[in-house]
Amino acid sequence: DDCRNLIKLSGIKIIDFCEGQALITAKIIKQTKQYGLSLGDRGCIALAMFKNCPILTCDKIWQKVALNVEYIMAR
Image (cartoon, rainbow, N blue to C red; front, top):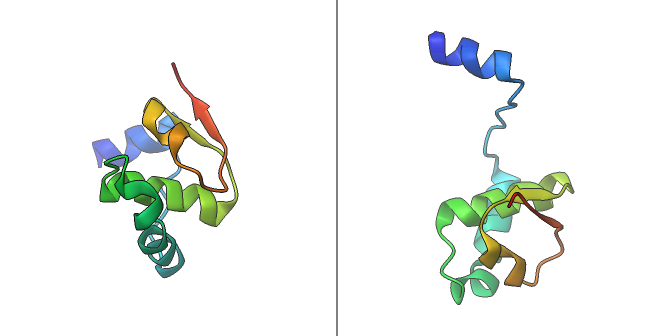
């Protein structure tokens, strides 16, 4: 309960991983494999593609992946 309350207070939105995101995650394996992106990395990118929104990341390698998504570097 404490963890849920903390997340709620922080304004962080938790989004369920759906079938559409899973399909995108699978489809981008070829484009991301050479950069060593993990399943979690691909899932984050898939969410941005699915929601048509930019990605905030500290992983500079993501910018090298040629996908239809906007990367915003946090540092």
